[in-house]
Amino acid sequence: MPAPQPERRQLLKAGALVWTAPVIAVASAAPAYATSASNLSTSTVTVRSPQKPIAVDTVIRNSGTGPTTALKVTVTAPNAVSATQVAPDGWTVQVTGPSTVVFTAADQLPGNTNLAASFVVERGNNGAGTVTVVIDPGGGGLATTQSFTI
Image 1 (spheres, rainbow, N blue to C red):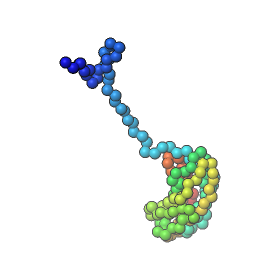
Image 2 (image 1 turned 135 degrees about the horizontal axis):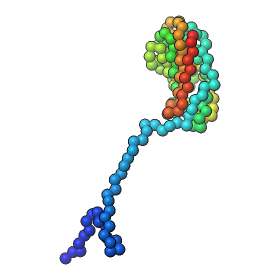
Image 3 (image 1 turned 180 degrees about the horizontal axis):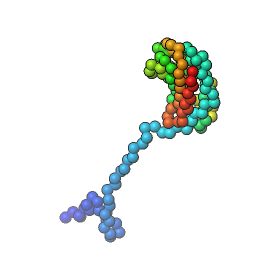
Image 4 (image 1 turned 135 degrees about the vertical axis):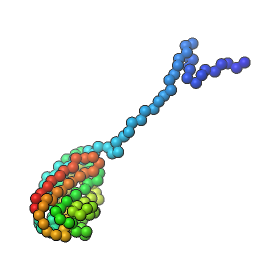
């Protein structure tokens, strides 16, 4: 007669019977992105040529310890922007709305460094209003926003 086998949740050790509980793995949701070590503080943003086109001169400072991950400069201008925009060297450009242009950096800005860049936004019409410039490092880093009345 074969020896009796313990049930699957029992363990015989040193003559004592110990019940073992099944292991339950608990998973928690991870954030969609990790927080970034990049933080932007803009040394200067100036808007010149308040008629058409609008020129935005910046000195972008990454005051964080890590590089930016998706550096973008978004310019919202009064009146309609032109469908044709030209990006500065090392940037791509996309018109995302009737008055919004997004410039995206091809190369990222390392931590604790500055970048001088000028962005020109072509408009179909002259006109006064508010120009808003948002500079975002991407990846959850701290962005900067400045507005100007022209």
